[in-house]
Length: 61
Image 1 (tube, rainbow, N blue to C red):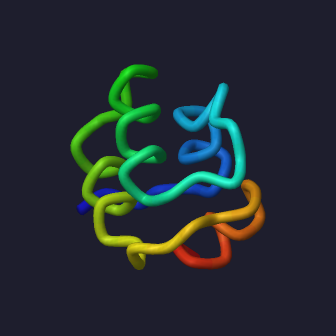
Image 2: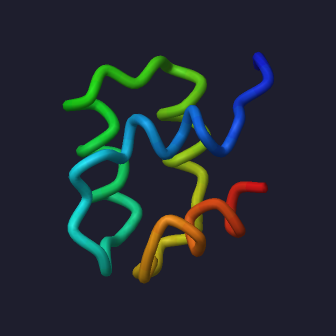
């Protein structure tokens, strides 16, 4: 898997209404054209609600 940065992930999460669960994050990233690596990372997040971009970044990185 290629190296993924927090900025890259947040770019694909533009427009997310927080709080948001994992499935919502993946769905938004798909709509925003995320590549398979980003989708895999988001799909591997815990199945819980995230209260903002920082919470997503902390769970990934």
